[in-house]
Structure formats: C-alpha cells, structure tokens
Length: 482
Image (cartoon, rainbow, N blue to C red):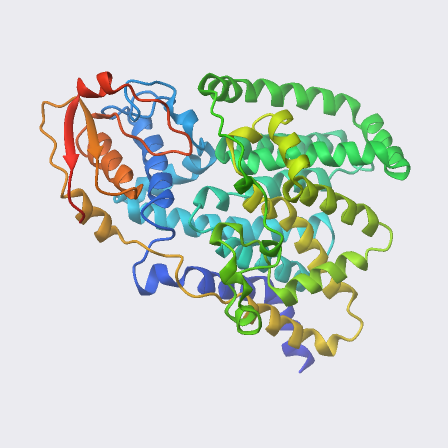
C-alpha cells in the first residue's frame, strides 16, 4: 500500500495535468468544438494568422503593425492585443497544421499545458512545495473555474509569461553566482516584456501589481528593510535590466500612444462584490444559484470550498499573512470602490483603455493558488487530504458551454460573402444585427481569403470611419441573417 501511495505521489503532477486537460479540453476531441465563440476567439485566431501571413509577406499582410482592417487607418494592430508571444508559439504549429482553426486548437492546448507547467514550477521551485501540493495548485491555476470562465478571451490564457517572470524573481539567491542571478533577472525581464507584448490586460496587471507591491513595501517598516536590502544587493542588475526592459517596450508604447484609445468611464469598470465569489461551478450552484445574478464576465470565484481553503492557507502564513491580505485588499479596493476606481481611471496609464474590473482576479490568482498549496502543506491530519482533493476537483466542473463554434461553421459563414476580384478595399454596411461575429466574417473573407483591405474591423476600440472614405470602397449591404 505504501509503495502504491509513493508511486501515485511521484506521478501526481502528470495525473493531475492529464485530469485537468480532460476536464478542460474534452470538447475539442469529442465534438470538434473550438474554444470561445465566433467573436473574440475568432479574432484572436485572426491575429495569430496575420502574424503567420506576415512572416510570408502574403498579400495585404506585408506590414506587421498594419493589420489590413479599419482601412485606410494604419497601426491597426494597436487597436487590440498584440499577441506577439502567442504568434511565436502559433507559427511553429502552423508549419505542420494547414488549417488555421485546427492550428488554433493545438495552440490552445499548448497554452493550457504551459499554464500548468509554469505554475507548477513557481510552486515547486520558487516556493519549495512538494510535488503533490504543487500539482494541486497548478491544476487550479491552469484548469480551475477562473480559467474556465475566461476561455472566450483566449488572450487571457497566456498568463504563463507572467508566471515564468515571477519564477525568475523567486529563484534569485545571493549565495549563488552572478551568472545564476543574471540569468534569473534575464528570465524575469524577457517574460515580463513578452507578457505585455502579448496581452495588454495581463501586461497591465503585472505593471499595476508591481507598483502596488513596491509602494506597500516602501510604506510598511518591516518590508521597507527587505526592499532596501534587495535593491542594495542587486542595484546594478536592477538598473541594467530595467533599462533594457524600457528600450524593448518603447516601440509598443509608441504604437499604443499613437492610437490613443480611451473609453468613457462607466460603472461597468467596477468589479461586482457578488462576482468575487460567483462562478459557473455546477456544485456551487446547487447550493447557491447566486451566480445567475452576475454577468459571466464578472464571475471571479474559484469555488466556495476552494476559496475557503485558499484563505485559510494564507492565514496559516503567520509571518506574512497581514502583508498578503493588505495587498489583496488594496487591489480589490481599487476595483470595487468607486472613487478609488475613478482615480485609477484618470491617473494610471492604460487603465482608461480597458475594463479591468471583471478580470482583476487574474492578478490575484497566483496568490490564491499559493494559499491553497500552503493549506495542503500545513494540513496536519493527512487522512482528510483525499476528501479535500475530491471536493476541489468536483467543484471545478462546469457546464460544457465554453466551446461554441466549429471550423465547419466558420467556413460555412464565409461562403455568404462574395467579393469581386477588382475590389482592393471592402466596406460592408451591416444593417441587420449588432452581433460582432459579422465583423470577424468580413475580416476573414476580405483580408485573408480575398486579399483585399477591410474598412470594417473588430477590436475593443473602434476608430472613427469617415463615410466619404467608406463610400470610395466597394460596398456591400448585409440584409439577412444566416
């Protein structure tokens, strides 16, 4: 019996990874469904395909920053997430997979595995948890309710860049060689930059979270000493790699500033208090159907039981719990208290271009996962470990409604668009539906399959289109649903 337990313990990282993968991705295999929907998911697929076509200088995709949409505007990639890190992973897949939608499915699977692997390394190597504890934490980070609730926004699946960046900091060790510590700083800096270049939301969260952490450490006397010693020990590395980081980010900042995207302030920027605990868990909703009162995008819960375990794990950190809770409290305060949120909107760069309230959980998720791992580590009576694990796993089960489109459906929709060969730029006057999936149809049909520019576009921020400019292009009116 002991030998079997030992084998299961050693294999737990692989077992939980496979289990999580099956729970999270089974619609890909069973129903040929693709993650997300015909809106954001297809647009991410479009951005990735643009990067692939740009590498081949194909058709209207010859300029990387100028996605052939919102014609005649330039710098149109800056109207959305850059997805550069995602493109780096997508291009090798595309070498072996001919169809863009099939390549997206493989790419999505790779993101899931990288989220698991990166969070496992942070817990195992960064915080020195054992294999089993690290695997449970990685399972929740990569396949849990928070992740499932954001499948529709696949750019948010690229959080492994953030985790690898955190790992670099955690591996710093004054007792080791300068080469080791320089490699750690290099890892931190490169993945920090890649996260910002890939997903604006996750990059912004990293910057905001880092600023809050530094200010908190500068205010609290005990932490101020640690911050001072850290800066003193690595002052040259901090200066050097910060300069490199700034240089690498200058092109991105220039492109985003040129767009100047800004959305008006609204209460939708605030996180919903009920949403902090709400999720799509089937188990949770049997006891409390309150999640139905919260919009899907604003559900941030890890599950009631899992959340309690995580909070208890933070409480068990006797030396650091007040600092951890202070950090969590400050983050949540800026997204739940109206005056603080408006101050953030007006003063913190980039916040006015996004609605971070419903997604702020992604900044806190690594902390909650740490608390979960610490609870399991500190659990004195291991007899309850199996029961706790089963409850956590069952709580992560949700309805299979996050995979809402197929390759065949995408291709069928595109057959309804007939674009004359002589059209070099196309404007569709959409009169029948506010459904933004039509805009993705137009982007694929026009800029990829017909090698023409599109006046239409799909993004979180739309530039003003001059009707006179639009009228100079080939125009089509969609006047029926299909």
